[in-house]
Figure 1 (spheres, rainbow, N blue to C red):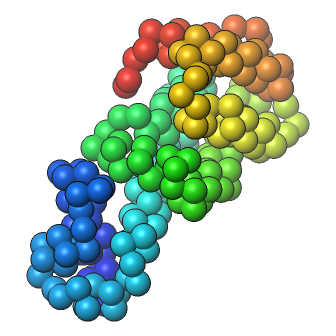
Figure 2: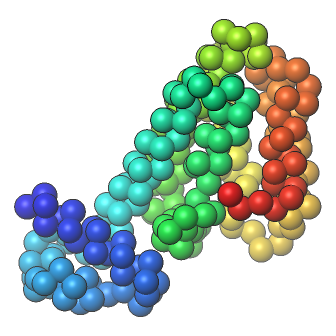
Length: 206
C-alpha cells in the first residue's frame, strides 16, 4: 500500500511540473498511475490530501539537503550559513512552481502548514552552524536555537509573498535591517553577513 501511495505522489509531482497544478486532475493522476479513481481515493481522500503529502515529501528533501550542508565542517562557517540558507530557497529547482503555488497565501491551509513546518525545522538546522561559529569565535551567543527561531519567524512574516505593493527596494531594506540585527543577536562582527546583501541585491537565483 505504501508503495502505491508513493507512486501516486511521484506521478502527481511529475504531472504538476509538466502541466501545472490547475491542469492536473485526479483523473490524470489515476490514469497515469494505471488505477481507477476509486482506488486513488482509497489511498488519498482528495486531491488536497495528495498535495499535502507532496509538500511533506518535497520539504523533507529540502531540509535533508540543508542539514547535510549545515553539518559539513569542511565548509567555513560563514560560507556554510549562506549555502544552507540558499539551499532552502524555493525560488529555484524543478519543484519551484509546485512550492510557490502551494505555499501561496491563497492556499491558506497549506501555507500555514509550510510556515509551521519551517519554524519547527529550520532553526535547528541553522543552529548547528551557529554553535560551530561560537566554537570558532565568529559568533558569541548563548542562545543559538532561539536566535535562529527569531530569524525564521521574522522572515516568514516580513518576506511573506502576500503583498503586490511591496517593491524589491522594500525587500532589500528589510534584508539590510535583518542582517544588521542578526549580527547583533549572534555577537558577530559588523559586516560578516554582507555577502547576503550583495547576493540578493544582485538578483541572483542560484
